[in-house]
Image (cartoon, rainbow, N blue to C red; front, side, top):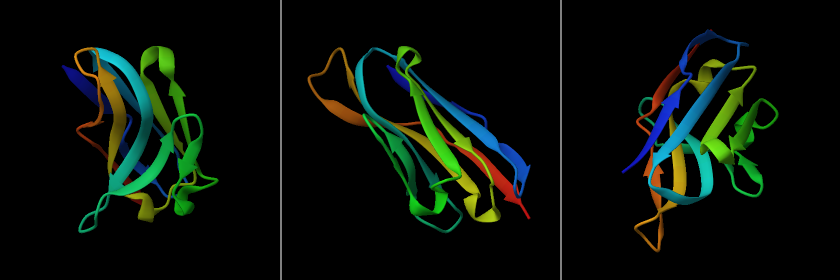
Length: 119
């Protein structure tokens, strides 16, 4: 009933840029926080950035990544600049949202999009 679909991943050289998008669709009553997480090979999934009333970033991406949101489209974006090989991983979209059929907010995840930064 709810889907989060990411797009915009790919292969880029170090120093390059990518823009990720994630659109939430379905029977959505309200979305609280949206964000991006990533998982590098052999590592745990980690927070990259979140946005609700304010934004929050992992220290390693501050000044390089910008998260934004279009509430009318239930879409969150991640503009990634000055990419380096340490940014390589699968990037997952997250939303804390409430469906019309529920009184509760719960977590939803996208399927992930691969970002590869070559040196």
